Amino acid sequence: MIQAPRGTFDILPESAARSPVESAARRKVVEEQAEKILGAAGYGRIETPTFEATEVFARGVGEATDIVQKEMYTFDDGGGRSLTLRPEGTAPVCRAYLEHGMRKLAQPVKLWYLGPFYRAEAPQRGRYREFWQVGAEAIGSEAPETDAELIVLLGELLEALGVKDTRLRLSSLGTPATRAAYREELAAYLRAHEGELSQDVRERIDLNPMRAFDSGDRGTQAVMRDAPILLDRLHPDDAEHFEAVRALLDDAGLRYELDPTLVRGLDYYARTVFEFTSDALGAQSGVGGGGRYDGLIELLDGPPTPASGWAAGVERMLLAARDIEAPTELVDLFVALAKREGSRTAFELALEARRAGLQAQLELAGRSLKGQLRHADRIGARYVAIIGDNGTATLKNMESGDERDTEINNVIPEILRAGRLM
Ligand code: HAM
Image (cartoon, rainbow, N blue to C red; front, side):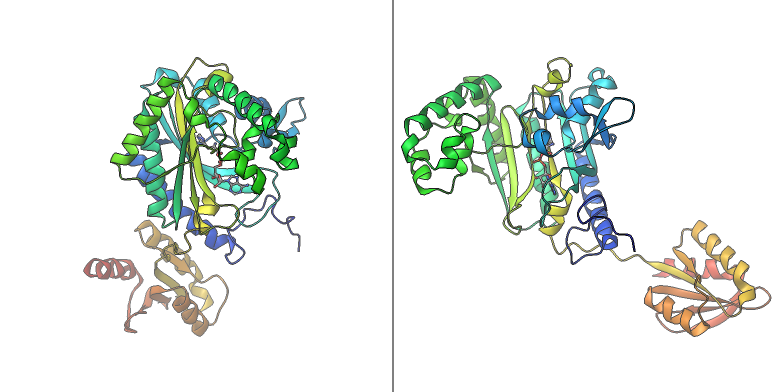
C-alpha cells in the first residue's frame, strides 16, 4: 500500500479517531452553517487559487513573519516564476479584489471562503501542514461597525457549531507608526531592566520585544507588570475607533477580554485585532482570529483601502465541537436482483428514481438475494425493489416489513406517494 507521508498533503481528518470520510461530512456542516450565517449578512462566496505568486504573501503577510520566513511551500513553476501554496487567504482575496476591479463595486465588498491552506509547521493535534479555513473579509469600509459585525458573525458561527468553552480576546494595534514608536519604547524599558529578564527575552529585545509579555519566567513577568502598554499609546483617532468597536460588542452582548499583549502572526494588521480561543483544545487553542488590515491593499499596489476580516480553522472548530454529527444520508430505495438477468432493468429503475428526486442505490457487488436485503438494511434503505420477471418487482417496505408484487412502473410512484403521507 502506498501511503502519503504522515501529515502532508492527504486531506487529513481532524483527529485520529475519525476517518477522512467522516471528517469530510462534518466539514460540510461547517460549510452549511458558514453559508447560512455569512450569507444572511450579505457576504458572497469567493474562491481563489491554491497557489499564488510568492510575492503576494511575501509582501502581503510580511517578510519578517514566521509564515513567510519558515512556513511556506514555495516552488519554481518551471518557467522561472516562484509560486507558493497559500498559507492564508487574506492576501489572495485582496489580490483578487484588485485584479478583478472590485473597487468599482459598491463598498464594502463582503466575501467569504472555505478551502485548504498550507503551512510547513511541525504537525501536532490541531496543527497540520494542510488545514482548512473558513474566512470572511470586508474590503472598503473603515467603520467600526464592520469590525464588530465580523466579530459577532464569527461568534455566531462558533456557537452554531457548538464549539465549546470559547473566549474572545480583543485589542487594538493602532497604526504601524504608533506601533514602531511603541516598540522602541518597550525595547528601551526592557533594556533598562535587562538584568531581571530571562536570557531568552534579553536576546530578543530588538527582534521582538512584544514576546516578553508571553514569557513564563518569573523575573520577566515581574518586569512586565509595569511595562508600557500599546493600548495606552494609541493615536486619539485609533482609540476612538476602538472604543466604538467595544461599545458595539457590548451592545451585542458579546463578552471579551481586553488583551493589550495580543499579537498576531501576520504583519498586515492595524487597529482592531481579535482571537477566539477554546479551552477544549490543547496547546493549539486558537480557533479563529483576525482584525483590521487597512494597509494591505496598498502593499499589493492598490489604492489606500480600509478592510477587516477573520479566518477560523475548520479542524480546530471540529475538534472543539465533538458533538457535530453529520446527518445520515437517507436511502429511499435499494434496487435488488432476484436473478442476474434483471440487471439492466435494475440499473434503469435506479436512474429513474434519482431523476424523480429519490436517493436510490442498486446492487453492485454480486450478492445473493439474502445478502442484498441485509445490505439494504445496513445502509438504512426505506424500500427495496426486487426485480422479478416480465416487468414486475416485489416492493418491500423495510420499516414495516410489508411486501407486495407490483409493476416496475409503479415502484417510483408508490414510494413518492408513501413519502407524501409521512
Ligand atoms: P491565522 O490566525 O494565521 O489568521 O489563522 C486563522 C486560523 O487558522 C487559526 O486561528 C487556526 O484556527 C487556523 N490555523 C492556522 N494554522 C493552522 C495549522 N497549521 N493547522 C490547523 N489550523 C491552523 C489568518 O490566516 C488570517 N488570514 C486571518 C484574517 C483574515 N485576518 C484578516 N482576515
